[in-house]
Image 1 (tube, rainbow, N blue to C red):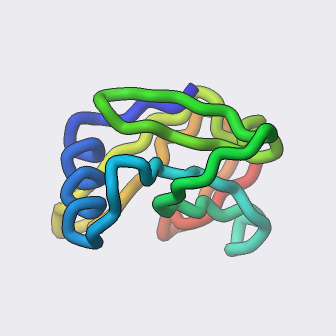
Image 2: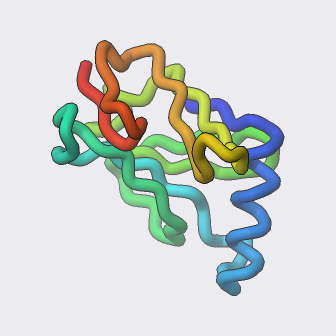
Length: 108
């Protein structure tokens, strides 16, 4: 399961509205190869759910994760920061054994 902070949920709802997505568009979290630590998070809106997807809901946000990515993100908390030290979504992932300096990539 993936948890979402109040701040991240608010920002996701704002983005969905500002980009004219309907309530049928859910948040898809995916892990793909890349970055200086080996794995990158991919976060976008998606209105398609396949048989190979897992589906979660937290704070009114529906989250889709494909089974391959689920292994890497179980127990992760999605947060949003708009401070001076960084702006954007942040994944607080207990499975990550190493992250890069900018926080964009990780390894397990």
